[in-house]
Amino acid sequence: MKVAVIGTGYVGLVAGACFAEMGHQVTCVDKNAATVDKLRRGESPIFEPGIEKLIARNLVRKRLSFTLQAQDALAGADVAFICVGTPPRDRDGEPDLSLIYAVAKDIAHGMTGRLTVVVKSTVPVGTGDAVEQIICRTRRDVAVSVASNPEFLREGSAIDDFQHPDRIVIGVEDAQAEQALRGLYAPLTEDGVPLIVTRRRTSELIKHASNAFLATKIGFINEMADLCEKVDADVTELASAIGLDARIGAAFLKAGPGYGGSCFPKDTCALLHTAQEYGVPLRIVESTVAANNARKHRMALKVIEATGGSVDGLKIAVLGLTFKPNTDDMRESPAVPLIRHLQRAGASIAVFDPQGHRQAADQLSDVTFCAGPYEAAAGADAVVLMTEWDVIAALDLTRLRKAMRAPVMIDLRNIYPPEQVARAGFRLVGVGRPHRTDAPATADENVFELLRYRALPSGERGRGSHEELVK
Ligand code: UGA
Image (cartoon, rainbow, N blue to C red):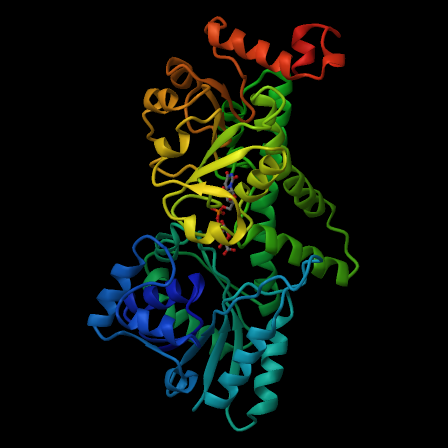
């Protein structure tokens, strides 16, 4: 089939390259000349493992091309995908749909015959109706169907997610759109991938509900982690045990510093905005959003506590900046509020991330960007593990400790087994895990108890037991 894809961000580029790989004839459109030039050379403007290989292969096969002009892609197309961004308009979560509507107008002007227009961007329920109105008002001479086909791709594993999805969802209002989308996805559905066919509005809501549910699952396990810390239980064991119940499921039960990225924070707020518009309270999603925002700030307090109650004048190394591994995306990364908070509290910050430095530099100032983890840790009073990149999960812990001034590790992703960290001589603070290993308190640990005690304002010392004081 002949496919036009408008927008070459994460969604459009991955979808376009994967449709070409499936055998379709794909033309991707972007308004940015430098982006189109890069793509024509087989270079990706986004960091996504495997994407450049896929682009290069399909450029050679002449199944994938890139253009600045929507009408080039739309001429003779069977299906046109809208894959442009829908950033939040303001703090109340309402997404800015102006790019979607502008593309709808471009499509209306450029289409040459019957066309199925598919909104793949994440949009609030009812957006498909508005797109249909725009196109039908502009072009009464050509038949058009508007469908919804949300994506469920994760950054970092987007190609695999596209090629092996749990399900494909299409929201259609007529048989032509259903037929076109069934044809497009036939290579996947013939392999057994379930295809869910719904009305357009249900499909739009499925996407927001899906992300809100996953965000809530993370919010839940993070709160369990807080409780584990207080009652001396282990959240990683708790998550494995509850996750084995098929009704709960093991995925998305990793406690951490709070979810980030361009999707969960934005989509949960957009869903709340829709619910508010329709007068429906979504208290669970509201609490998830509030708890996640508060959590990101609380992580800095965890670091401050681990270093003895004050980071003023200390050097803190932060390993991992991106909101998750295998991406260069810094949007809503929990590393940003953490670093800013520590800086306000007087710490100097050295950081290392395999891909995130360029984007991080737009959001952070006065941090030292280092070429590797050991360089960042040199002379540091504590190291914070923020993102579970492979390279950060494979550190030589003894080398790391030796590079540092004080052996304090705050592992906000529970990357390392506590015993391994203790063996390397670190004092470890994790998330939802007992702070001590089974081993008796080491000399180091006792020193740290003392340091914490000393960091307390003098009026607080001597009140209650030592353990109560350092809580
Ligand atoms: C998310 C969804 O997982 C995709 O299905 C969806 O298509 C995408 O949003 C989107 O709407 O476009 P993504 O934002 O790329 O994908 O990343 P996730 O892997 O879902 O992680 C999101 C955040 O949750 C990250 O900060 C991650 O560290 C955090 N997380 C994830 C946890 O803290 N614990 C977990 O168990 C899982």
